[in-house]
Length: 127
Length: 409
Image 1 (cartoon, protein in one colour):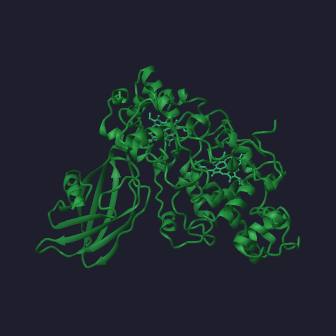
Image 2: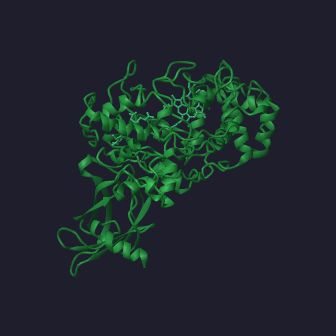
Image 3: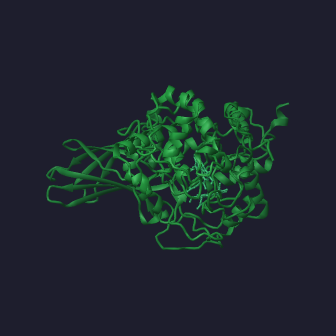
């Protein structure tokens, strides 16, 4: 309950994952959830569970690539992450490490069966 | 009564949150790749080895020569000097167990693999793994401790099969049978694991900063513990000065790497930093995911395999812990600055920065602080000096008969 409340407040800055995210072309919905501890931690390894929802008529998601960068600092993560597919539209990105506080930009790239890339982008501000 | 303790400096809740996340220092993180990490017998052996000059080629340099307990486990020099002259400043061993990567360039991924480096480094102890293992085998108190944690010491008495001075890069080492090299490597790794078990006991002690945070946590904030300048310094550190972008958490370090574009120090050619450390880590037989690790499949081990190196890591060095920083001059990877005042002058103007390439990370901005604000920052840094570890941990174990570097002149 407390966690839920905490996450509702933090949702504004994306620290608890998000549900309404879509690729820029609107073709795929992305739901992502950090775990543990359910709030994106600064400088601690954590996993991200990603669910891709193809809009009606879209091709099924074929592959998913995740990246995070700090554009203001001109750097990305110090780790390589390789999403692991756990179901038809589900992935887990293990051992993500966001080593600094500040604004990170998350990119979820869905690559469809024809090799076309659909990008969903979201800023996450870490304290 | 309560009025007397009334805090006189207004602190933003974010500053209080920063302070509470930085104190107290927790026990070192679990270390699955070293099965002996928290074994007291291993720590006793490691304690003896740390002070033992017989591990060096000329039998005159121990770890404690450069990591002197009387100087907060550093040597007070700009760059280390022993068998040869190095190009790196000697960091403290206090709290080293909290680091994710070891050495300024991160070329070791565990405390136990780090400990094996200086023994063979020609400019540090200039010894060899073969002689180190033989020394333990031939010194009864060391041997019995070794055998009680690792089982029977292999028989290496045959000096033809196990030639003295053999270490990678020497012809005698290359000529050894691979199985014999394996035997030596396994025993050598055990020595590193024992030294690491001792180093894990060298926690940064409680500082005025920790005592102040404890009072805050108890609801009885008392700025007399820190002094007003240090409280104002804390507010700057966690606020306008932006130090907390890289220096945060119990070690006051993000445990990762950044390029501050420091001016080259005297006698030091610019070092590629993490850019050079990473290939050395990958090549090491003592990696967390290597054959001598006690948990090569663990998450910790997988993290070594997942390191990403980008152009911004060229010239980047590990963010040092700021615990005990006032007790460990000179500063920066090449001992670039003699005093904390010099460090703060650097951050204040950034005039000394030398940009060596245009892929560098871009975080620092000149602070443009007044001398009074810089003095406050320095007061805060000085409040991070902790009580030293126990006399027992700071002295060579009595069994070794080695004199404490503190007590002999």
